[in-house]
Length: 118
Image (tube, rainbow, N blue to C red):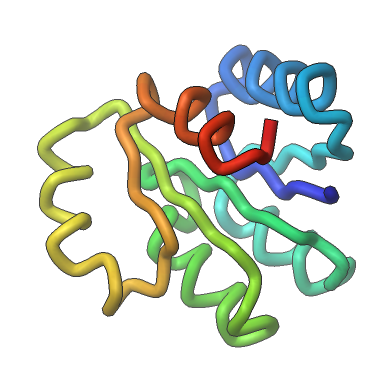
């Protein structure tokens, strides 16, 4: 599986990418901000899954979802954040946003395992 990981925290991005690669054998491409994520997706439409932080420089997770949905309305997209209140708020409008899942970052690895992604 080819995964686009949009995460502005370099340490967390490398750790998550390493885990997805070693546990699931996935190819992971890291984007350190939302605009880069949209550009990477636009230039390489073969991503199977997108995991994006909600809050990033230039464009946040909601803008990433919107930009990617214009290119491919069917790709799986999950959003995550360390801000638990923000996650609760966005879960209320999850279907309108277009994200399949919205998670607290401390739930992400377990949820990826449950979904069979790693």
